[in-house]
Amino acid sequence: MTAIETKHALPSVPVDELGPNEALHRLVDDAIRLLRPKDVVVCDGTAAERNRLESLLVANGTVVRLNQKLWPNSLLARSDPSDVARLEQVTYVCLPDKQDAGPSIKHKYPEEGHREITALMTGAMEGRTMYVAAVSMGPCGGKRSRVFVQITDFPLIILMKHLMTRVLGRDALIELGKYGRFECGLQTVGMPIAAGGTDVPWPCNSTKMICHFPKERRPGVPRVLSFGSGYGGNALLPKKCDLRLAMSDAREEGNLVEHMALMGRDGENGRRYFLAAKPSACGKTNFAMIGTSFLGDDLVRAYEGTDGRLWAFALEKGIFGVAPGTNDETNPEVMSMLRKGDVIFINVAYLPESGSVWWEGMTNAPPAERVRDWQGQEWTPGCGRKAAHANSRFTVSIRNCSKLDPRWDDPDGVPVDAILFGGRRTEHGGVPLVVEYGNTTAGVYGGATLSSEQTAAADGKLGVSRIDPFAMYPFYAYHVGDHCAHWLKVFSQMAHPPRFYSVNWFQKDGAGNFAWPGFVDNDRVLDWIDRRIAGQAKALRTPLGYSPLFDDFDLSGLNIDRATFETLTQPRPQFWLGELDRQAVWFAEVGERLPAVLAERHAELCQLFEEAARAV
Image 1: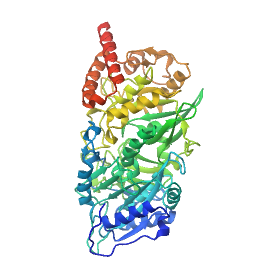
Image 2: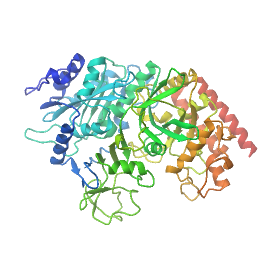
Image 3: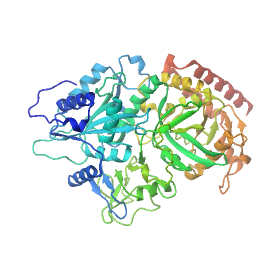
Image 4: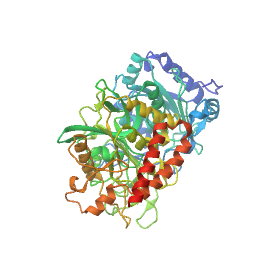
């Protein structure tokens, strides 16, 4: 960041508000000179701060306060139609060597990225307040946690941090002062306000751009800059933006930072912990809630413990969940969490007479009362529009969760028994309900070739399948081939690695209906996995791995016969030969950095499925 000429006196921040860290002071001073805010607030994370920001946002129309009896202390926010999802098309990773980017990254050279986004951000906070918010990603004080300092001009982001992060404000600054090292980023909605103006409802800019600088690890220098958006992972920098930086750093440190849910399940063999890598809007939150205990639904750090096992902990303490389809049957625990209050709803429908909210799938029938859709327009069931945006969200603290695991805040995390990879694949007789991979190489191959139909969580064409390695395709900060190699290295050296599985709840039958009931019934899959780990469940060996047997799988109460079950669970040779062709195209895009062992696994699968096809 460079100093610029200003037309007015710039604010300053008292030393005692920022603590003793010199790099933090440099960050704030440089940000003030670049962004030119009218004043600066250092967030303290208190209830008084939250109340003050809520009152500000209600007064200027950014949020609506809901009926306090129905949704205690909860708010509704609506965004601009151009600011409703992750912005993959304008999100860049700035690396000195373009060859380090690979096929999944939109690349810019660092000097190019700095030049373009600095031009956009110069003076972008004119007339606005600049907030400095420090959070802990991971248990406070944990040796594997890290402090992230975000500078923003959107107070709604600060309210969301109150719900999403473990530590906010002065407590995090104390940690920063003790350990010194922190990550940081700048984010602005990019809407300067004329003299005498006020903050406007959900501001955003028609121009949007996000730049990451993974290689720039200098104290107090922002490694991510976000311009123009106030939505979710574009603006909550410690979330998906820092995921890119943290995964890059984790590679150097020998551990993993991944896009995964973490949950525990009690069975006959005690409590087992599971990680699930699933693309956004593919059921991660629902999956994380079906077990006995919940730890997190989105971001984790995982590493090898002294016992030779994989250990993991969640980086956040809140849920930024997809609203449509969430109801008392599909996810009763989340609905209970929402009704306890302290929720920020985004882009759901509003019921002005009762002061409530609604979204498609929340109830069997639309509300009888008047409804305003996510853009504030009058809505009726036959109007041809959705009442809630397909990517409408709720933000809620996991402290509302009755299933919160007692070890959720343990700085060492919990030991992981199995890793599940799962996307949204609807083809009849396609990706099976569950497959156990036979070894670590097969498991990493399964993660590297995870495929899913695109959802409304990102800008792009819905329903189109793409390979989404480890559910990380939109979040890479270095070459995907190097990430595959890193996974192989981590798990091949581990004395007691977890088991690896593929799951798919979304297969449809010939009539276009979901063939598997899903949601709470997915626990039946976990029961089979639990028994497999314990050596208590039989399985059919297939070219892909090990599939469950009809007579050894809990189907009680379900109207699923043997033929349907076998279609759900056994990989079909012709389908998988087509998948392998798609994977070959993807591997060609990955290029020479694809680990040789994965190419060998691909050749092995081609041979096995060709033999199986001839035998049919």
